[in-house]
Image (cartoon, rainbow, N blue to C red; front, side, top):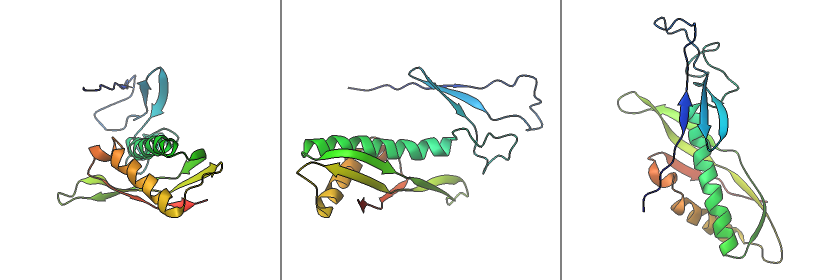
Length: 155
């Protein structure tokens, strides 16, 4: 059975010039009733044509990998009888040029720290296995050629 996902992306030029490439990249992303301000990365398009406080596509990509991994991790931990109290990840994506000199997000490193409670706590080996299973199941990880690595911390 196929699943379908929808996102709306809205941008308007307004009174800005366009052909000189000096227009705002600020736009609106809409999904499931949520609106998020988007922009190009200020690392790619300089301010004031980018909005540094807005979500850029590269950040959204890294966040989607981290979020998908976390959601699978939580599900798998519950299935194994581990109570998760908190999960914190600071994910980092790196862009590099490929053989054709086109930039792409070639690597994403996840650094999750998970806090457990209850009488059943995972060993470090079990924690690694939970993360391995989450990575194997993650829809986004299975959809990209980006190298995804984990630096697992035991709290």
